[in-house]
Amino acid sequence: MEELAIKIEHVSKQYRLGTIGGGTLKGDLQSWWARVRGKEDPNSKIGSNQNIKIGERFLALDDINLEVRKGEALGIIGHNGAGKSTLLKLLSRVTAPTEGRILINGRIASMLEVGTGFHPELTGRENVYMNGAILGMTKAEIEKKFDEIVAFAEMEKFIDTPVKRYSSGMYVKLAFAVAAHLDSEIMVMDEVLAVGDMKFQQKCLGRMGDAANEEDRTVLYVSHNMSTIRRLCTRCIVLDHGRLIYNGDVETAIGIYSDCQTKTQYSYDFSQQKRALGVSMNMQFLSLVIHNSPEEVIRSGDQILASIHCKANAAFQNMGIRFEIVAADGSVAGTMLSECMICAEKGQLLDIDVTIDTSHLAPGNYRFDMLAFQRNEFGVEGWCDRVSGAIQLELQKTNDSDLEWLSHYWGHTRFSDITITEVKKNMSPD
Image (cartoon, rainbow, N blue to C red; front, side, top):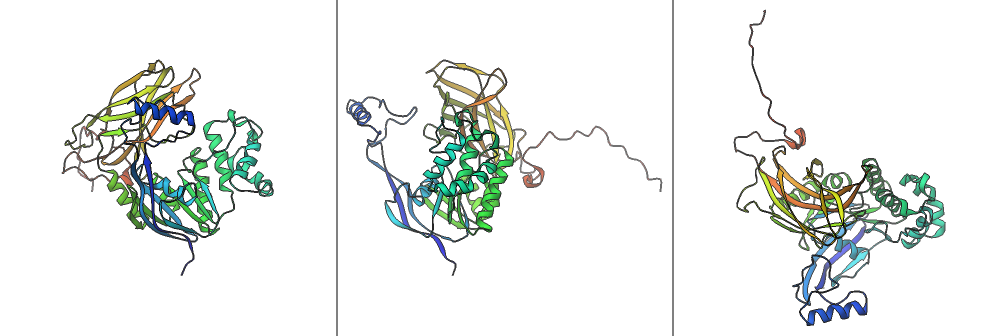
């Protein structure tokens, strides 16, 4: 029997919603006094629900049983809020389970919040030493691997530059390189391969593949990108509202996950959704509502009528919106850009009505990532806000008699039909 790296037995994790815990005594007293008077919490996040019942229980994980063998690459997939990150935090001992027990055989390298502990005033070199120490590496280990870490991050020219001058991609690449060179038997990763450009992502995938296949290390990987799950993982589990609903073959797991995602949603709340690194939040997406009737089947070619509710956290000009369309297999199907730019003053609430044309999308399951961006006078783009999976839907064929579209052969974009203007027929000379 193969040696187990991780054994999870009847693990549940419960949270209490709306409880006091602002981090300071002053903040807690302010929140308590506002609630006593029935006023809005002055320390609540923008767009958060003020009507949460104090002490209400929430099961982030519900009776999870799982075994992971040594040297196995396990994929963990599920919708936002399914419990994926909570499970990884339990394995990394960031928090403890409410019930059950977790047995771990080996040292764990956690890449949950890549770049945590980086100081903007320090150089890349100094941050490598500091971050490596935070992650559990000795000074001798860091010195031995320093050149390898810098080469992997492709940061030789900038390693003695303060990281506050790095782009968000450079910052995360260096942080990932430090974490990826930890000597450990188990690697735990939460969406960390979505860093850098495509070339660097391929290098990261290769590094993780080598860790599982050649170095016999156990890899647990959370992602919404099904193509990387296919490439990296040998087995996959699907989580849904804190419960483990499938454990087995990768393709079957992806199919189950896709079926869950095809349930068309019509109202989306982004106020509590985790944002990516490099987002300024000058403009914050709060929610999105689709006005098409829920009874109406969304077919390829239909228009999606929606309203985006957002708030200007700073004054801005020349802000645009775009939707990046991702297919169920994780491949990019295309991008839609707003035709005009938006201006706002600090503190203003905006309701932006949009029309999304699906006429060039082939039938299939899609995720729309929504992004607000600004361009300066030099044409350089900065992200104001980005929400992954802002819209998730299934486009069906217009008519049952239409050709069955084979996206894996023909792609996810269907252009206008060819117009045949004339057919000339001649007899063969033979």
